[in-house]
Length: 387
Image (cartoon, rainbow, N blue to C red; front, side):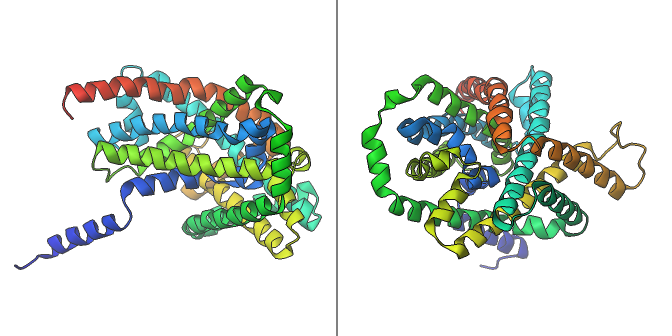
């Protein structure tokens, strides 16, 4: 039977689709969004999990399970209604209260645009200080200048390399965790035997873990929806949520575990994972680790910069008098970076322990829980419609 060009293209697309199932792609996007400089430095994991002793090795499962539930309902609604644009999705999903939730999401997005790049700058500047002996402000200026230059001339290059940078960090983290657990296995066993769950506030440990899921939900749910086209069934939506939960929960748990073996030094360090790398006595690994974290930081900064350009690059009050689109975009990026530098000046610990903490609390009630509560309702409606 003859096959026309259109048929050939459809067959090719189906073959391509079968190579990597959509649910795996969604879980990978969740994983890649999650693994940034904050996780790579280890400070986020220490503050929210490892600081709570052996309890912190299990609470990541609670946090990621709640986030997975919210993501499942979002994916299933997206699949059934064939909506993959986040703005359109929220308008329909939260109707008739879409204006209220759009405002909440806007607030969360803007705060995240301050905290996440600010943490990238603070983390990378601290790494450059510890590894090269550069002054913190010198490292900060270098990062800002490089970010601006890449936004103007090399944004496509950075965006193209972002997947490779994420994979690089994952490989390095896997090496650090494997070697770190091997080196400190005796200490881990001793700490485990010498402590109990009651040594730490159980309710507090669970609550802080849930707040972690809260601030993660501000970006991850939207990213997952944007790549949900291709889900074929309810099972696929469930697979994506469960796989993402397992991958992310396991990653947090093993990073918490390896830090458990280097207490109290790693817990008190601003860069816990870098401290562990230094204990491994492998200069090459130190160099590669610093390089990848700094490059990933720049990539994250540029991603947020272009998100703001897309959001405010039109006829907004601050930029509508700037005629050149390039100048308008550069102005937005510079304003963002100036504010991010101010945030970075508060330091890694303050950004994570205060900024992310309160963003997490806010996001629990305006992002994550609403997605779960409304999702249950929408799921029942879809069942009644036999979809």
